[in-house]
Amino acid sequence: MSSSAVELSEIVDAAVAEHRDGLGPLMPVLHSVQENLGFIPAESIPMIAGQLNLSRAEIQGVIGFYHDFKTEPGGEHLVQLCRAEACQAMGSRELEMHVKQRLGIDFGQTSGDGLFSLEPVYCLGNCACAPSMMIDESLHARVSADRFDELVSGLEADE
Image 1: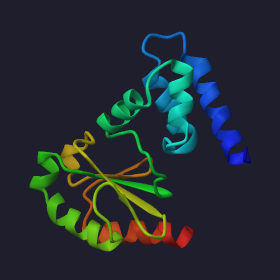
Image 2: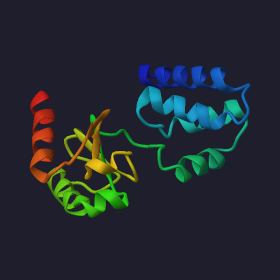
Image 3: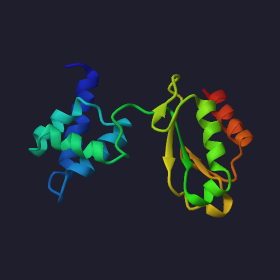
C-alpha cells in the first residue's frame, strides 16, 4: 500500500473511530475526511462503507445530495460570490460575469492552475454592503470588478 493510501486509511479510521458510536455517524465521518483532505476521495468510500456497514451507493448518495461535499480537490483559494437578492440588486450579476471571465471558470470549478475554486453562496449576512464575497476566510464588501482584480492579483503574487 502506498504512503498516500496509508494516510487515507488512517484518516478514515480516525474519523470512523471518533463518530461510530454517535447517532447517524456518516455525515460527521464525511465532514471529518473532507476537513482533513479538502475533499472526499473515491478510494475512501469503500473504506467508510465497510466500517459503517453501509453500501457504497448509500455513501455516494449522501455525497451527491449535499453540495458541500467535494469529490475532487479544490483550488488553493476558495472564492464564494453572494447571489442573494440584495447583492444582485447592487450588481453581483455583473460582478459574477467578471469573476468567471477573470478566473476562466464557472461555479463549481477550479482554475487550471489549481489556484482558485469558485462557488455560489446565497447570503453572507453583509447585505448593507453589497455586493459581497468571501475569499478563503475573509469577507469583502462592496466588491467591484476592479477590487476583485486587486484581491486576486495579490493572491497570485503570493504564489
